[in-house]
Length: 162
Image (cartoon, rainbow, N blue to C red; front, side, top):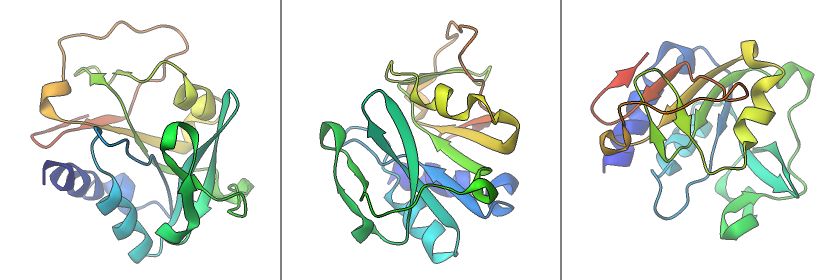
């Protein structure tokens, strides 16, 4: 239920409503559940891109429904090989990013692979990055390194940090 609150709060952001393209992670069992976010985005006719890990790299691929997903890296659902990557006209939009911890300065700690930092670094200005989590994941301060991307906002069930 709290996952749904966070997702609805993220979907109420102007950046989400103005975006045709939505990039969203597929949840691990112990993460905030993004199912509602993905389903609602598809219903609204948005192009939904979800990650696929290939070796040490992450790419995003478009899905049209949950049937476009299959078990992938670490048991996380991923888009099938037949799902297309974004073309040049789709490399912009609203991004829902995961994390283990967040701070009010809009920094996040991910899972250590740097996948999101690497993927969005070159075209950072083309994306609105919204990290999502729960209030209990907010910490006083997260140390940042030069390659760490700052989020545009952090969304929890209790507040949006922007």
